[in-house]
Length: 481
Image (cartoon, rainbow, N blue to C red; front, top):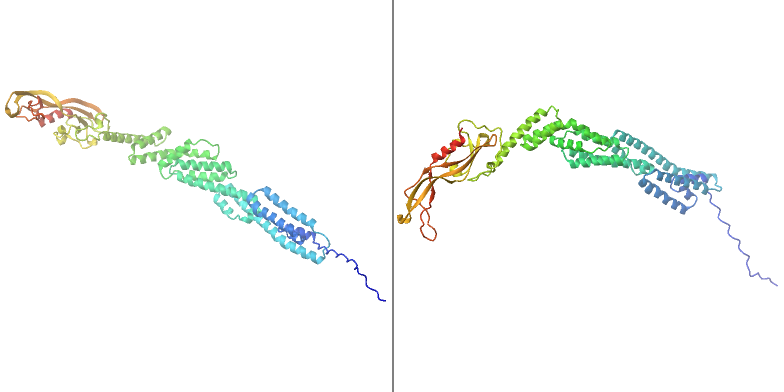
C-alpha cells in the first residue's frame, strides 16, 4: 500500500534584513565640512543631502552676498558646524579599514579645496579691506575704487562685512565724484552747483562715517582750484562761501579762503566790467571792495575806477536824455537835465552848442556854432515852437480883387522860448523868450476864404517875414559870454 504526501507546505522563513552599510563618522563629518553635503551622500541620506544643499545655496549664494553683515556670517558658520556635527553623529557602525580610508580620502578631497578656497578668499578679502582702509585714511578715492574693483562674487561670500564696507566706500566715492564735478563747474560762479556740491559733501559726512578724509580731499581740490577762470565768477563763489551757514564740520573751513581771494577777485571783476563798459556794475563792485576791505592796497585803484565809472555813467545819462529830439520835438533832457563833469565850462566867446527843438529857427543858425557830440559841446539849447510876439506895424488891405472895404492887419514878431543848460553842471544858465523881427506890410498878402465862399477879409494878425540875421543875433545872446 502506497503512502501519499501531505497537502500542506511548511511555512517559509522570512528573508533576513540587508546588512547595514556603515559609514565612517569622521568621513561623514569631513564630507559635510565641504558644504557640498558629501557626508550625507556617504551615509546614503539623499533627501537630507538635497535639502542641505538647498539651504547652503540659499545662505552662501543668496543671503551672504546680499545681506552683507556679520550676523549672516555667524549664521553661515553655525550652519556649517551643524552639518559637521550632525554628520559625525549620523555616521557609525563597523567599517572595514579599506572602506574607511576610501571614505576619508573622498571626504578630504571635497572638503579641503572648498575650505582652502574660502580661506584664501577671506585672506585676499582681508588684504583688500586693509588697502581700502588705508585709502580712506589718506582720502584717496581713486586708490580705494581700484582696490574695490577686485571684489568679486567669491570675495563677497568669503567676507560679507568687507562687502558692506566696500559698498559704502564705493557709494561715498561716487557721491564725492559727483560733488567734485559740481564744485568744478561752480568755479565759474554758479550758486546752483555750489549748493548741490556742498550738500553732497555734507550728506557723505552725515551718512558715511569713516569717509571724512575723503571729503577733505574733495573739498581741498575745490579750494585749491580757486580762484576760478573768471574773477567775477570767483566773486560769486566767495560771496556764497562767506554767507554759507556754519555746519560745525570740516566744510566750515571753506570760509577761510574768502579774505584771501575776494579782494583781488573784486578788483579783477570790476576791471573787466569797466573794460566792457558796464559802468554801473563796475562802480558797484569797486564800492564792495572798499566797503569790505577798507585797508586793502587796491583801495586807491578802486576809487579811481569809481571815478571813471561815474564819469562814464554821466556821459551815458546825458546822451540817453538827448535822444528823441527829432524835428521840432525836444528830448527828455530839456525837462530833466543831467551833468557831465568832463564837459567844457561856459567861457567867454561863443560856446559850442547842441540845439534841439524848433528846426526852422535852428536851421537859420551858422554851423560853426553847433557841436556834433556832447563831449565837444558846452551848452544844450532847447528851442520851443514859434509863438506870436510883439506887434511891429499895422497896415490895411482890401478884400478879394482889391475891392470893397479895407481890413487892418497887425504884423508881429516871431517869439520862441529858449532854455540853455550848461552840460558840465546840468545847470539852467538861460531861460528867455527871443523875438525875431523882419519885414512887414507887403504890397499884397495871400489868405484863404472860408469854404462857404464869403470873403471876410484877411486875418487880423500875421507874422513878419523873419530876418535870418536877427535870428542869429538873438541866439548869439544866449550862447555868447
